[in-house]
Length: 396
Ligand SMILES: *Cc1c(COP(=O)(O)O)cnc(C)c1O
Image: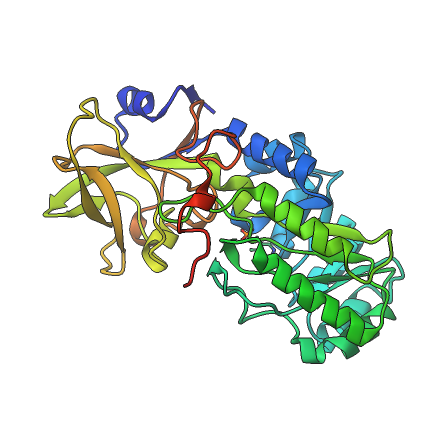
């Protein structure tokens, strides 16, 4: 992949008509080292947040050895890239053929479940294997997160005891997992969830070998600057150690966003301006899915030489013919921006590049490597302490 110092040099060299994805391997490696050295347990990468083979290799080289996969295609992908990696199949609803292939052809031993039916499916598809790690997914609150994951998966606390007891009969190691929702804006989301884990263990009276606190670790976006990740790690460690589990029990986590958000940004071109609306060449069906569908705000910067213009608020339209291809922002850009100008949109490594489709004939993009810093970072050690801000707890 061709390498440039930064976005501006890419624009000068290529004057691109298509969006350009800018990858920062050093930022992804730094995030991976932060988790592999700092999280008080095992960190597995949630592949769905960005399944790029280059990124998966970068994370592996920086110490991430475990991968949370959710489909048989993700199992095959990671196994083909990394024969030595440990794969954990953490989707609680799988097909029998996917379980069987994962177990017998790809060495997968760890599966999650949230029903007795799924347990029976796993037992059957692995012919009653004795070497399974089975994790029961507990439903927990998403109230502190920007993106809920509370509705779809997870057994209710009231129904957890019989499922934990039944699962105990069929596994070598029994675990409990949960997901507090993506972009959890306070570590207390994990404290609350671990209290629910404690209640489930007490009610079921089973030996638990693994506690997996899932994903949800935040990155930094406009208006969403979280407390330091060290605070999350410290609170999780303290509340994990206080659980009624054996002293050899393991703590796992499944970060997606936090490991890859800083990896990529995107250069887009302004095709047209109508008042305070800019028509750009990526959008709701491209890497800006979240900007359109859940009004997520991403940092932006105009790629021009004259940096002295005052900023104004803009909304974006994407390139397809669909009214829904609209991103309300607001995105702060120079007030004289016009057709032909270029914009860099930052923090798109997670759920950005991974969401691109070819709808309406758009979706092509070139990818290059850049060497400068991402627009925001949780890992640089030079950020202002956001605990002083009022964004620490989101009330959404
Ligand atoms: C999506 C997902 C993750 C990653 O979540 P982030 O919020 O990106 O950290 C982890 N575990 C499971 C089971 C998921 O579905």
